[in-house]
Length: 545
Image 1 (cartoon, rainbow, N blue to C red):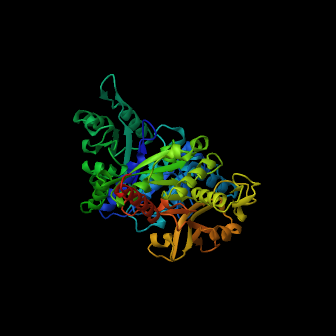
Image 2 (cartoon, one colour):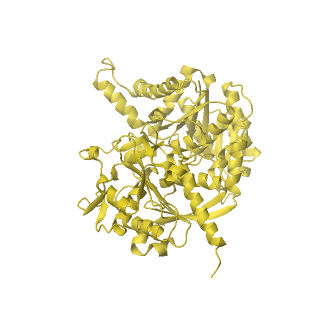
Image 3 (tube, rainbow, N blue to C red):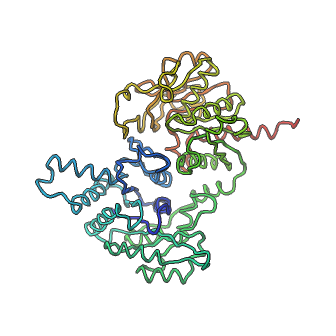
């Protein structure tokens, strides 16, 4: 196996994950089997207990691992299906080392950062290699910024690992920022030089330097030569990675213009043909040149944070491109609806989507948003908490169950339509204890959900929640017109609800956004966007009064 390591310098949030994912996509188009992983230096065992304000969304894998959102990019840009072994944090490393020490696994030795902690980091790479013998390249992104104290051990582990597997089997890529000073009117290369110098102090010599710039033209020949000379890399290996103009899916095309994938395969001694990026180009063209346009309201509580609903927005893009449609997302803070009204805040839109979340802040606003969509025949799509919100709204306003709520928001509510799972009752640990990962569900024929899944009998989707639809209210809500179109195969828990009399009113307990890809949009998102587009086109054809 060959190894590619992606590090970052100068500042955080450079887009290392997108650069790594874009490279992974290009390598796959060459016929190379790629596996991606992320090393995060923070001390949390995983991001599952972090606030979205700290970390953005938590991405969930099939095996239930709660991971960094970059793993979402990895799965969207490449064909790899990842597992908990593809995300490693300092918290996991130290937890493993201490557990080994407590059971005497180190045979009385003094446990030290080097070699014991660095060995544990390397063990993860060996483990992934062993579990994926058919993979050609393991592409690993190191979180954080070179120079951060918490990341030093990971970089030292990479230095040692490169010696073990042979430097000819390793390619180091360093992503940096070229800041532009407005007063000087030019970019500055010195921060990049110093960042690379930090790597060289550790013993790592980058093979490729990816320079984040606002515009490719800013990295002119003079600056490229300067970086190459001072950072000891080939001039062709200094590659600009500019801000994308329309969509993040332009990333692979931008890197391909500078033959980054060719440089990598040459460095690793892999003999493969040119990449076939026609399908990727076709997808990007659909995003950039849509035939239609619709407006969707996303009603949430972390709405000001782009990364809080990252996979939601990307899934909307995938489905929009599938229907040659640009989707203008109206981000609505649910709390604003509580102080005004859904009609005033949301106004005229072609669809309403309520994503997942935790806690009671903004929930009444979301309930009003669900009611607004139901009563005005606006296509509605609820995800996780959004499904629970839809159930509560229906119970209150259609079934006349005054005080209907979730016990998450009101433990003593009159009608707990949504309640805590029985196995969750006595848990005192928050991390990794929810219903997590892939779960098989039964689809009932004749339903909208069954139609969207092309009449499949069973589906497998990823979950992340503690509260469930209360089966005690299932019969009553069905009598009043709500359809339960899917239940979990093992426990019989409600997975999808819908209203047949509505143009499109569907909500799922799981997270379909975790399985959507650029040229393979998730069927529920595709159906929602199609219904929203149909609504707009019908309105445009209707005679004006």
